Image (cartoon, rainbow, N blue to C red; front, top):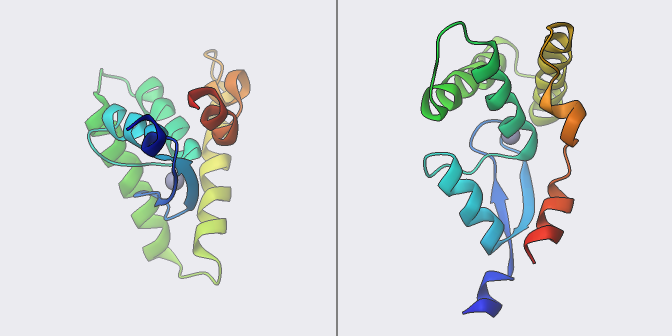
Length: 122
Ligand SMILES: [Zn+2]
C-alpha cells in the first residue's frame, strides 16, 4: 500500500479550480485538514489568512466557506479569459494587503511550496 500512496494524481482545487499533481498521500493529508476538501497551497494560505483576519474565532470550515465565496464572487463578477490565473492573482493581492497588519502573513514565512511539501511526504 505504501507504493500506492506515492502515486501522483491530478487534483483540482475546490476553491480556485487550479489543478496540480500531488502524491496520493499529500492529497489525503490536505483533505483531512480541510474538512474533506482539496484546496491548493495558495488557497490554503488564504484560508489561514481568513482565520487570522477574522475578528471573532472561526473554524477551518467557515474559513474555507468564506474563501470559496470569495472565489465564486470573483468569477461571477467578471468572466475573464483566464479565470484561474486571474483568481490566483486576486488571492495573492488579498494576502499581500494583509501583510500590512502586525501579524505577518504565513505566505512570507513558509512560501507556497506545494512541490516542496510533496517532496517532504515522499
Ligand atoms: Zn486554490
